[in-house]
Amino acid sequence: MPVEVITFGCRLNAFESALIRRHGAALTDTVVINTCTVTAEAERQARQAIRRLHRERPGATLVVTGCAVQRDPESWARLPGVRRVLGNAEKLEAQFWAPGRLESAVGPLDEAPLPAARPLAEHLGRARAILQIQQGCNHSCTFCAIPAGRGPSRSVPPGEVIAQARAMVMEGFQEIVLTGVDLTSYGSDLTPPLPLGALLARLLRDVPELPRLRLSSLDPAELDEPFWEVLATEPRLMPHLHLSLQSGSALILKRMKRRHSPEQAARVIARARALRPGIAIGADLIAGFPTETETLFTETMTFVEEMDIPFLHVFPFSPRPGTPAARMPQVPPALRRERARLLRACGEAARARFLEGKLGTVREVLAETERRGRDQHFIVVESETPLPVGRITPLLAVARGEEGVHGEPL
Image 1 (cartoon, helix red, strand yellow):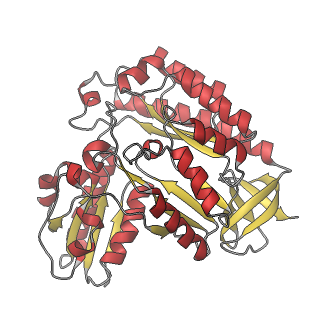
Image 2: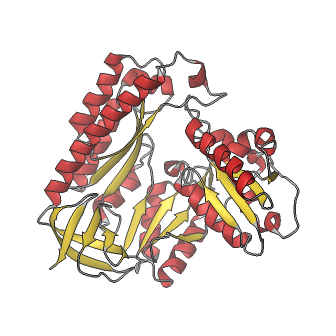
């Protein structure tokens, strides 16, 4: 059997898993488990998968890599059936996937080379490509283990970003998603520094044939003025912002060591809506952060309701060993889950209102399959009429769907 890669965690891990498949194409009867360390649940699922593979495929070579391994390689190496562990820098290098190579390697990330920007097509057809432009994080949020797993922030030089984007367009991709661990810190380590907004302007100028550019999660504390100018003036930058918000309580944000306040986040959302009316706003939220009282949780609920955020990603707090938040007074797990449920319900109501507001409007749908695609706001649009996969087709939104809306040809 060819190499198999099982991925846990973020879109960036999925990007890197595709690269691992490419590097390990010559391997046989090998399973790679690409781990995540963001939550305890993600690590539990990865360990469970390893134990299951050891039982069901005792002859297979199990290789474990990813952020959880980077933080604690010894504990992963001790799991039954694991032949080798690789760090986050090593997993991206072809030399470590040569047939017959069996040694483990987990080096310090502060000595890792700059990441290479490499194209990756999403698994749904040939519609959308992902381009990694940044790696690592320099911040120290009290709940987060990512800096230990990914290392400091490093940016891909703009010339390489643009060259890769041009190559993707030549391959036929209609949309590129720029991604990174801390995307808004892009360019701070370059000489001279280049803010994210300036990169966006240059990319769209130098690749005029690119129809759509989209961004992954953004830190509301780091959005620069060039970014706002591009958002206001460039229709090819999709009207869809996903913010790393985490809380709507000022005190909880301080205890998280985030660099924005609720008032600053509200101004970011208001400015985005003023510049691009109808823009889709999403946000990450942590429910049940340590010391979160009922009053502080209500502050987050009120913020989400007042901001009317339609696309929420809500996570119950998960203490990560070694982080300051793991040593703070904890909210009981059942209460964390209940608060997460309430926040999700609030987001679902906002999403219903947002989708209702799109009915009767034209959706520019990038088809991922013959019956389904995503519009400019990243809304799922389903069609009874077959769509040309990988092409952008205008459809009229006529009704609510299970996930988004139903569209009909004009």
